[in-house]
Every structure is written in C-alpha cells, then in structure tokens.
Image (tube, rainbow, N blue to C red; front, top):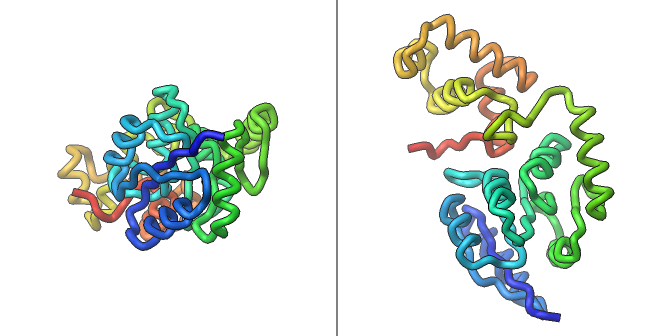
Length: 227
C-alpha cells in the first residue's frame, strides 16, 4: 500500500506535536506539514494535497469547519478529520454539513486516531461514535437534519444558526463591548442591538451574554484573539 500523507492543523503546540509524533511512528504514515492557524493550514492542504488532514475545530481565524467546507467546495480529495475538546450532537452535525469525513474528541487514544485515519481513506465516515459507509452516512445526516431544532444551512455559512448581522453583534459581545458601543460601531439603533442579542440568546438557548459567548467559543464560531 502506498504511504499515507497527512497534515496536522492545531494551535496548541504540544498537542499538535503529540499528534505528529504519534502518526510519524506508525508504519505507512507520513506527516508532510503542520500549521497553527486556520488560513495557513488551508493554504498548506491545498498546496500539499495530503491524503488526510487532521484539523482542530477551534482555531485562530478560520475554524476547522470552515476549512473542511472550503476543501469540500474545491472538491479536493483530502479527507478531513475534525478534532474538538467539546463533544456534542450539534458539533457532529456541523462537522458533517461542513464536509468532514470524521469527527472525534481530543481525548481519543492514539491507536484509535490511527484507525480512523485508515478508515476514512477507505471511504468510511466516523461520526457520533459510528463508522458508516457513504450510504449510511447520508441516511444518518438526513435523519439528523430532520430532527434538528433549527437550521444550520444559511447560504454561505452553514456552521452556525446566526445571520451575518447577528454574528457581527456576537463578535462585538466577545470583545466586551456594551450595547451602546455596538450600536455606534455598527451604525444601528440601541434597540436593534438588543433585538439581535435577544435573537442570539434564543437561538443558542442560553440566558445571558456570557453564556452565549461560552457557547460560541466552545463550538469554534468565535475566538478571543480577534484583531
């Protein structure tokens, strides 16, 4: 069997190096690149065209789901395995919508990760603890979408349930801005800001701004290191 090439994208140096070392010790696997940032990781994957890319969901700049989505649009053959520190059913659905081949938590055992690398290269999908054929995956995805409480497929950005304006407001909230400051920055009324925040809380099913920020951070929709 030909050598399997991989790229690893994760912004935590020790964790990223641990994955690289683990994969490099496995016969038949070769890591050909690594990156700490989303945009640079995407450029590397496009340039090197590895068989598999192992990508953290929550990255500075472009997140892992967006990377998977862009590669899916490109119709690139690289199979994407998304890693997350925060596992839930919504995250699995987001990963599937984005075009990832697998989704697993960061506490995965090394031998299990290697197993998943080999499984996705045979065309399998690994989601929600299940190993699925393409047909089984499509049936699972259809079922998940039908049972979802809200849509995650807004045009241009299927990875969160917010409108573009709501995302702008949320990013301002992440920066610690008051409603008045947000209104001035975005050129909208104070009441409109309050309406957007109410909508965000309802869509996230949380009670206050802090919970909304934590909810979005865990899912990689926003990050604290915004420029």
